[in-house]
Length: 109
Image 1 (tube, rainbow, N blue to C red):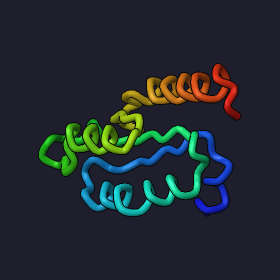
Image 2: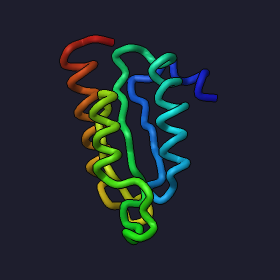
Image 3: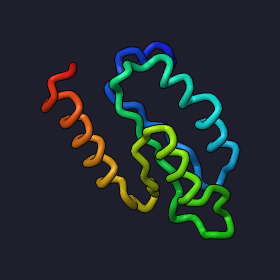
């Protein structure tokens, strides 16, 4: 499915579960590489650590690990909680602003 949509994407959102090291590893080892190879070179890449409302003892991926990975790979980073609606509106605003700055204001589409 991803191979069908990635070549036409202006934004790729990579989501992992902060309580699952495996989900982070899948983003790091598979999904980021695939999106960088198949999405347009000017596509915006966003890394989302979901379930940020989880208790600290359940967290397997720290904020710092997510931030550092995003920074090293040129990704926008944000932690969210879909169930508690934490940073969900902020995420949409960041994505809209990034799309506007990259594609509309610079007219690179």
